[in-house]
Image (tube, rainbow, N blue to C red; front, side, top):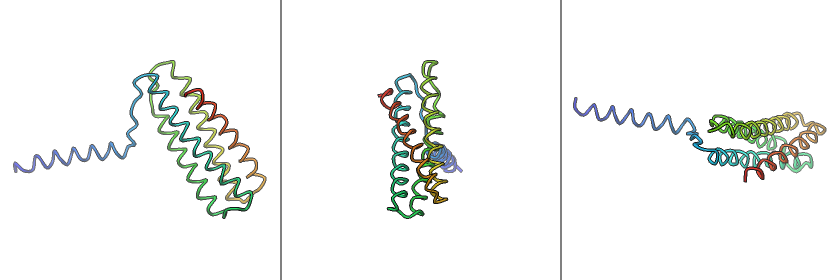
Length: 153
């Protein structure tokens, strides 16, 4: 029975590590500088997803990609952006001075996610007018993210 206690402790320890790994491990921002760094990383990641969606929509409009491929890529970008937004949204702003940064970043992420959702819908419908409108919306989202990127850098 003496051998059972270390195994139970090891099992509990491994379970805790596994839960931490699977939960995404969003570390807290201990000061405004760390918070701004997390905001910048979220904006950069979102910019990449928007650029990917934009590229695919442009190529779909030019009939250079299969619609099934465009659907998979835009849907993946939308899903990834949802994870980025949820991850950043879970970070507690360390001070009231970080509240505006949080609001600005979350608004830009939400707008980008909406733009990708509209692109996904347009791709699935093969609707050229909606594809063009979603491309303009993606361009606007990209510009907003670029402004935030410059402000946080």
